[in-house]
Image (cartoon, rainbow, N blue to C red; front, side, top):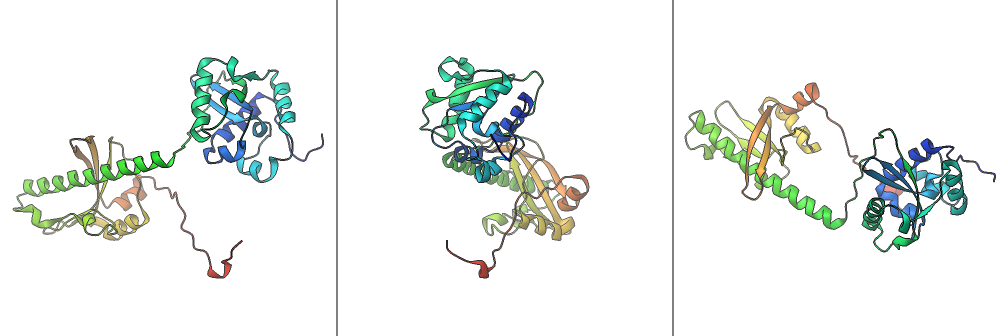
Amino acid sequence: MSTNFKFIEDEKELVQSTIEFFGKPQFWKATIGNAPKYFVHIQNGKQHIFGLSKFCAFKNITVEDYIESYRYKTDGGYTQKHIAKRTGKEWIPRKRIQNDIREEFDNWITEFHPNYTLDNASFITISLKEKVKFPKVKFTDPKTLEEKLKLQREIGEIGELIAFTYEINRLNNIGIKNPEKYIEHTSKINSSAGFDISCLVKKDNRFIEVKSSLNDDLDFFITENEYHTLEQLGEQAFIYFVHITDLIKKKGKVFRTLRNPIEELNINGNLKPIAYRATLAKSSDYIS
């Protein structure tokens, strides 16, 4: 068979291809189509990942490459035979595989392919002797995403209330009378201010961005607007980190405050851009 691409030569390369497939959940459905039958299964202790055999037979290509250029380069029958030959294993129907593998596969494929006929599937399993780092897969259906966003909003709102109370207590402790007069819950008035709370008292003005979570780690997201606002405010800018200990009872604590946070992050932290802002020129507008 004359081709201008390469197939895997051994189990190691097969594992690499399977990991590439499994790490791109956004393309699972597009890659496998409506009725896939053969899957490579990699077991690493209690971890399981799966890959479409027709993709996994290729060496050193991405899922995007496969969808664009390679999916019709060869038929499934050839790639299935190639994988069986290179691994020295036979394809095993779903009905005959171990219960734990069957359960893992069923949970995996029905998550994004709910109408799949499970008993159509057959597998070749590779059990790894050495631990391999499998990709962390993020597959979120719209309902789950909506619930997560709702939870995040709730966490944010409760965290701001905790931080607001913290400021009142802080001013009380330094002898400021009627501290409520000096504190504004800015985000309730202007959600694009770039901070959540302002506390304007004497020479200690504070513009506070609140970062809340259900744990006490210091890993958080910051928007472009927050970044530039806090950077311009300099020594008057703060981030208050809130650990919510009881979401239902709305309890928690400010466990760390950070003055001039952007400077501190640039010196002692880690900032990674994770999004792009794009603008399309009007002259390129068209309808296809």
